[in-house]
Length: 153
Image (cartoon, rainbow, N blue to C red; front, side):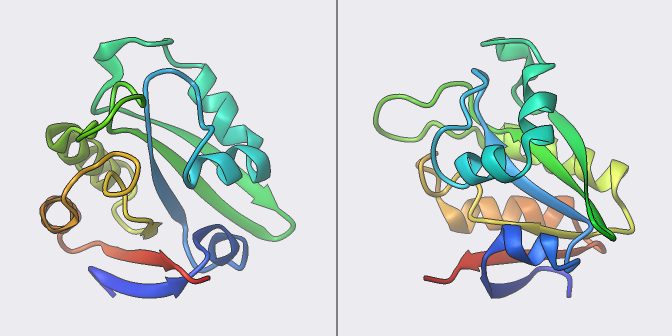
């Protein structure tokens, strides 16, 4: 379902084989200490290792991605660390809309036939406007199966 939306736990859905690729927003400082990044770091340390292979604090990685292949039993998928904001401290909008566009355009090139799942990237801790972000993602992933996963409590 291109541009769909479901309720659930993105990480558990990935482990159940629902998605080939899951995407989350990252900052440039190898933190992965809050939001969905924290449980990704805990459940999928391969994604954190991929993040640590990138430069620390470098503004040049804004708008780029790193990836990790995750294999658990007979399930395989990729975690995409999308560098959508440079820093993580302070108030106001930290997410870069241009970086979101660049990241999702790269995801479209690298994973064109995949089922892609993601949370509200950049709209929580990143302080961005979800309506704007959703439009960017839909445009970048046009024709690709992608789904917003709204965390179900």
